[in-house]
Picture 1 (cartoon, rainbow, N blue to C red):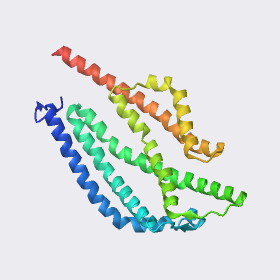
Picture 2 (picture 1 turned 90 degrees about the vertical axis):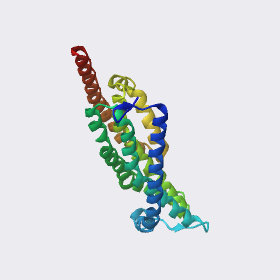
Picture 3 (picture 1 turned 60 degrees about the vertical axis):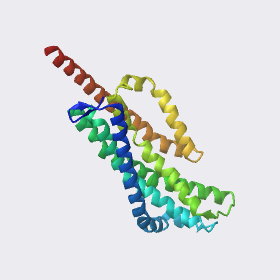
Picture 4 (picture 1 turned 180 degrees about the vertical axis):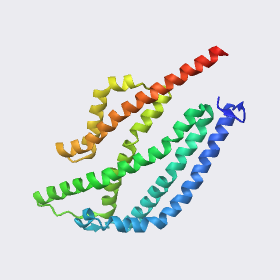
Length: 254
């Protein structure tokens, strides 16, 4: 059981502690969503001035479309602003059960996770999204199709393409974390490499236009991230093994 003030916490105390942290997160999420209502408008206006948006004429097919876009951005802004707090609360909940070195290491996961998330968003928005928009526009021109784009559909597509990449770029942090928990080993990750590659190529094909170039553009950074994850897993695994040996030696000396 997790230690609390020099004693072990009971199951009920764990539940109460978890509920307290969830209420704390929910409160700040509501606050950040309200802040998102003030930030949503300039962000939406900025995104409509980009080169990709200027290629298209955005329309509202329903009276509620602008409101839906506005609310969607407010919620996403609130979620993004709450994410570091969620990670910290998760760390604070599990950290009493960790060794001092493990606490410091796992706390460092938070800024790394944020950087990777922003990196995934940046990659998908600045590299992948313009390529996809250009591909779709050229395809419509080739087929003599006059595109009438809804503002809700445009931003929905933008969000569906960018947010998943922010999550996919969390792969190294997740692998590091579950390696320290003993759920996976670098040997297992290396053994299932070909299956992981296939799965990542399926993801790339699913979220990109049907051509090999765009598939490779998406799959390549994911494969690199997987290889980085294996290296990180090896480092985490060696440190975890070293900690176990040190603990065993200390127990033997006692």
